[in-house]
Amino acid sequence: MRDLLEIREQQAEHSAAGRPLPAGVPWLNEARRLMLDDGRVGLHSGRAALRLLSKVNHRVPLGVPWCGLFVGHCLRAAVPAVDIPTHHARARPWKAWGEDADPQIGAVMVFWHYWQGSPFGHVAFYWAEDEDAFHVLGGNQRDHITIQRYPKDRLVTVRWPEGLARTGRRRYAPPEAAEPFG
Image 1: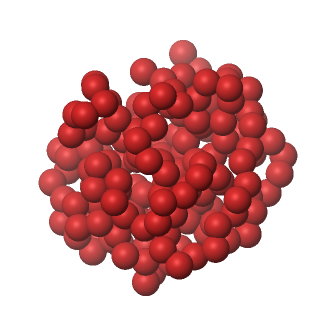
Image 2: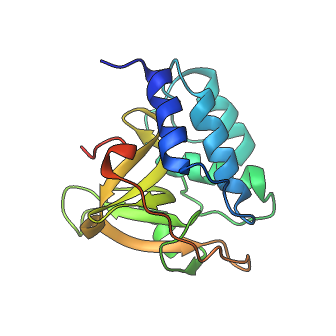
Image 3: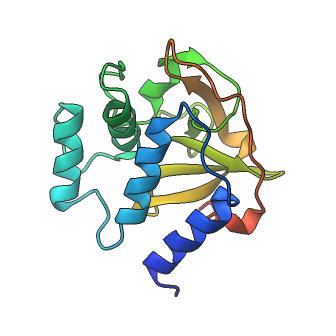
């Protein structure tokens, strides 16, 4: 099994395709910074999760899936005045957040788990895509912050922070540039 730090370095190299992120997505820069810094312990436990909770100013039991907590932290760290859903630690509350958008670098993407109408899901940021999947940078992906492939047919919605300019850019990457779904 490859070392976790090696995987993160390869993801940063392959997924960025050698290009800087477009201006206007400071939350994605925060997400990338946390991905490169997260190497030893998943954020579901310990001080790292408590730091995220305090930055978002909400209390969430540490046993709760934290993909939405990660998205909320990145947005709030980059744009302190941004509104985030009340129950932001989970994925589905992000479904009605912000404004409807097309897939683009930095967009918030909500996916379903188990079956399409289930209350379970995942939320992460658009990073790139291939023919069959979106490559999303998110938390609680394999218990870490990583770039992972999510099948396009599991997409529920794409959202953008209300009132902020959109990048309008999509990025394509080979399937092996992200962790496989599953």
